[in-house]
Image (cartoon, rainbow, N blue to C red; front, side):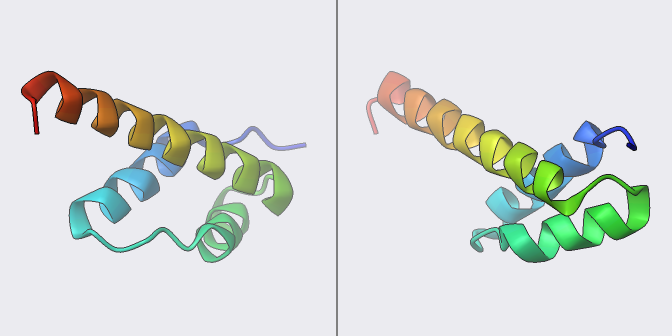
Length: 67
C-alpha cells in the first residue's frame, strides 16, 4: 500500500481554510488518491483528522486573542 501523502493533505486543508470554503473531503481524497496512490478511505481519514486539528488550533487562537 502506498504511503499517505501528509504534505498534500495539509496543503488541501490550508487551501480550504484560506479560501473560506468548506473542504470537500471525498473529492479531495479522491484527487489525492489518484495522484499518490494510497487508498481513498485512508486519505479521507487523514483529511478529517487534519481538518479537525486545524479547527481546534483556530479556536484556540481566537480564544487567546479574545475574539
